[in-house]
Amino acid sequence: MKILVCISNVPDTTAKINFTADNKSFDKNGVQYVINPWDEYALTRAIELKEAKGGTVTVLNVGEADTEPNIRKALAIGADDAIRVNAYPKDSFFVAQQIAAIAKENSYDIILMGKESIDYNGFQVHNMVGELLGIPSVTPAFKLDLLDDTTARLEREIEGGKEIVEVKLPFVASAQQPMSEPRIPNMRGIMTARTKPLKVVEPVGAEAKTSIAAYSKPEKKGGVKMIDPENAGELITLLRNEAKVL
Amino acid sequence: MSVLVFVEGLNGEIKNSSLEAASYGSQVATALGATATAVAIGDVNEAALARLGEQGISKVLFDADARLKQFVADAYVAVIAAAAQKENAKVLVFSNTGIGATVGSKLAVRLNGSLATNVTTLPKTEGGTFTVTRSVFSGKAFADVELTADVKIIAVKKNAIDISRNSGNTATVENFSASLADADFAVAPKETVMQDSEGGILLPEAERVVSGGRGLKGPENWHLVEDLAKAIGAATACSKPVSDQDWRPHHEHVGQTGITISPNLYIAIGISGAIQHLAGVNSSKVIVVINKDPEAPFFKAADYGIVGDAFEVVPKLIEAAKALDK
Ligand SMILES: Cc1cc2nc3c(=O)[nH]c(=O)nc-3n(C[C@H](O)[C@H](O)[C@H](O)COP(=O)(O)OP(=O)(O)OC[C@H]3O[C@@H](n4cnc5c(N)ncnc54)[C@H](O)[C@@H]3O)c2cc1C
Image (cartoon, rainbow over all chains, first blue to last red; front, side, top):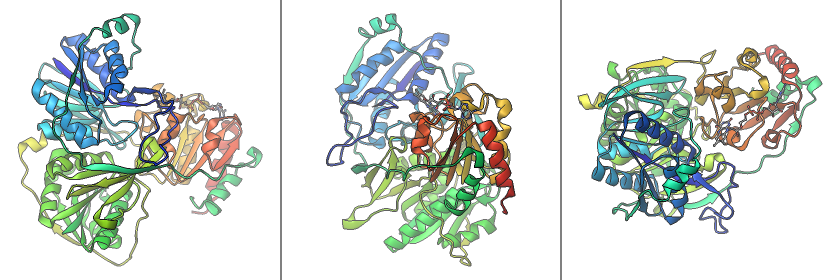
C-alpha cells in the first residue's frame, strides 16, 4: 500500500494575523508555523493504515525551503519519506497540478490531505486533484477503513448527518476530525527523521488562475454590552428591539 | 453570455444559502449586462424554482433525474457543466456549502476556470479585472482575489449577501438533462444517516444558533441549550471538547477544526472563547456570551454578555423568549 499525504505549512492556530505595510503579503514576523491541523488527521490515519497493513507513507509539500522543519516533523511522526516541490504555493489550482504530477509519476493507492488549510480556507485542492487524475475524491471524510486490498469504506460529513461511501483504490480523500488522533513525535522519531529521504523537485509548468491583490482585516466590534444576570430576560428584549435578530 | 447559479434543494424547498447565491448571481449579471440562469438538480419542487424570479433569475434548468435526489458529485458536475455550455456561462455561482465548493472545484478543472470559495462581496470589475473578497485565516482576515481565467467560479459564503425579494417575478422552469456515465456514480453514497438536531434546522443554514461548551458540565444538561434553541427557532452547536467527549454529535462542533458558521445570532453558553473556537463563529453578526467568569476571553468578541451561572441565567432566557409574540 502506497499512501501519499499532502501537508501544508500554516501559521499556528493562535498566531496573530497581520500583513505587511502594503497589505500585499502575510507578515511572518514572530509567527510560528505548524503542519495544517486537518493535514495531521490525514497523516496519522495514513501511518495507522501502514502499521496495520504494511506499505509506505510519503509526505508531499508544495512550498519553499522554509517549510522543511514541518516536513521533518511529519517524518518524525512516522512518514517514511518526503517530497518538497520547490515553489511558492500560488493558488489551489497550481498546488493541485503539482500534486497530480507527483501522483502520476508514483502511482499511489491513496492520496490524503486535510479538508482545507487554516490560512487560505479553500476546500478545493482534494477535489481538483481527483479531477486532474480522473479518480474519485471523497471529502470531507472523518472515517477511513480498508475493506480489502482494493476497496475502502469512508464516512464523510454532510449537512445534518453523514454519508457512507465505498470506493475502489486509487482515490483521494480529505480528512477532518475525528479521522485519527494526531501524534506527538517521540525522541526516536525525531532522531530517525533526520536521515529519512527528503527529495526536492522543481515544479511542473502550471499557471495559477487567481492572484491576491490585497489583504484586510475585519472591522473591530463596537464593544460588549453587559446585562445584569438578575434581569437576564432583558437580553431577549434587546435582541429583538435593538439588534433585531429575533 | 450568461451567469449560471447552482441552487440546492432541501426537502423540496430551496436552501437560504442558495437564495443568497441566486441574488448574488443576478446582481453580477446586471453589472455585466448578462442574464442570470439557475440550474437545479434532484429534490426541489417546481413551484419553489419558479419563485427564483424573486431573486432575479429568469430561467431555471431543472434535472429531475431520480438517481440525483442525493448528491453524487461527478453526476452533478456533468449536469452543471452541460448547463454552463448550453448557456455559454462565463460566471458560475454556488453557495459555499460542502456541495457547492466540491462541484465548484471540479468544474474549475473541467472548464479551466478561476475559482474563489468563501466569497463575501460582489465582484469589482473596474479596468477589465474581476476581483472578489474572500474570507481567509479562519475569519480573521479578508483577501481581495483577482480571477484571471475566462470562466469565473464563485462560492458565496453564507450570510454575506442579502436575499433580494422582488415579489411577483417568476422564472420559467425548463426540463434539462445531461448524459451520465456509470463512472459518474462511482462515489454514490451507500447509505446516508441524518442526525438532525431537534427542530430539523441545519446548522450551516441556520439564522440563529445556540451553542454550549464544557461549562454545561454534561450531556444531561443540554436541555438548556435545546429549549432555548427551540424557543427562538435556532439550531444547536457545541465546542470541540463537548463533541470530543461525545456529549454532542460531531457535526455540531464549530471552530477551527469543526465547521464554520456565520448566523445572524450566535449565543455561546459556558464556552470560554478560545481562539480556535472563535475561528468558526467570528463572522456571526451578533454574538451573545453567557459565562460565569467575567475574564472569559469570549466577552472581547461579544456584542452582548451576561456574567452569571448558566444554570440560573438560561432558564430566565427561555422564559422570556417563550413570552415573545412570534
Ligand atoms: C489545533 C487546535 C484546534 C482546535 N479546534 C477547536 C475547534 O474547532 N472548536 C473549539 O471549540 N475548540 C477548538 N480547540 C480547543 C480550544 O482551544 C478550547 O480548548 C475549547 O474551545 C474550549 O472549549 P470550552 O470553551 O467548551 O471549554 P472551556 O475552555 O473549559 O470553557 C468552559 C467555560 O465555561 C465557563 N463555565 C463553567 N461553568 C459555568 C456555568 N455554570 N455557567 C456559565 N459558564 C460556566 C467557564 O468559565 C469557561 O469559560 C482547538 C484547539 C487546538 C489546539
